[in-house]
Amino acid sequence: GAVVSQHPSWVICKSGTSVKIECRSLDFQATTMFWYRQFPKQSLMLMATSNEGSKATYEQGVEKDKFLINHASLTLSTLTVTSAHPEDSSFYICSARETQPHQETQYFGPGTRLLVL
Amino acid sequence: GESVGLHLPTLSVQEGDNSIINCAYSNSASDYFIWYKQESGKGPQFIIDIRSNMDKRQGQRVTVLLNKTVKHLSLQIAATQPGDSAVYFCAENLIYGQNFVFGPGTRLSVLP
Image (cartoon, rainbow over all chains, first blue to last red; front, side):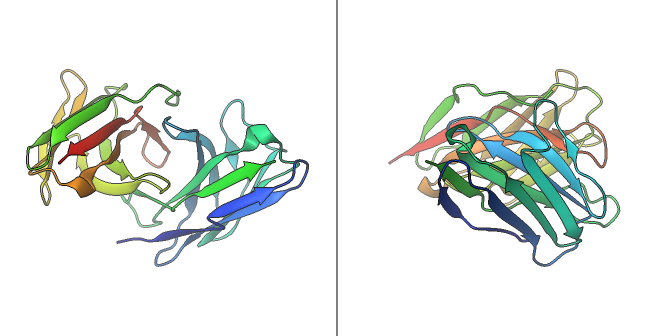
């Protein structure tokens, strides 16, 4: 099946620094990738939809200047948490959908756990 | 809107028994559904999907049932094993090409 990777899997940073998380589709091309965050014992909350070659679409309440998304190729999307603060500590998960027609299935990465001190 | 945080309901079953996990979805126009399994500290893993023109689909040890009349989805796991312990999410596709909306999740605990 389709494989999506994320890097890093774990990151600890100081408050005020920026953190970049990469999401890669390893064996398929993904025109669209999605970024989610998940707090303990809660469901996934969509943050933004990342479209290759265009600006990301952010969900209501998600600051686009805080969470910078770049989808420079059909296999890579990055999420940068700028000036991270302790409240940004969370589990960030990306997903990717194949470019093929009628392929709606999303495949998820393993997630990145961010801890801001 | 997106699923918001809730305390996860928990289903406990004995090893070897069958499990049934239920999900109520929100939009009668949704036409594609997926069940995901998420183990602790990992990303969601695709289990099985179903389109709205079907009411049942079977996989290996899993069956998904769709009742469009009451907007209900269920996941049946046969002969539940310890490795099935995880949180299970249903997801509905409201608009083709757009993101899925996730349910709140159900934690499945398999008792020895």
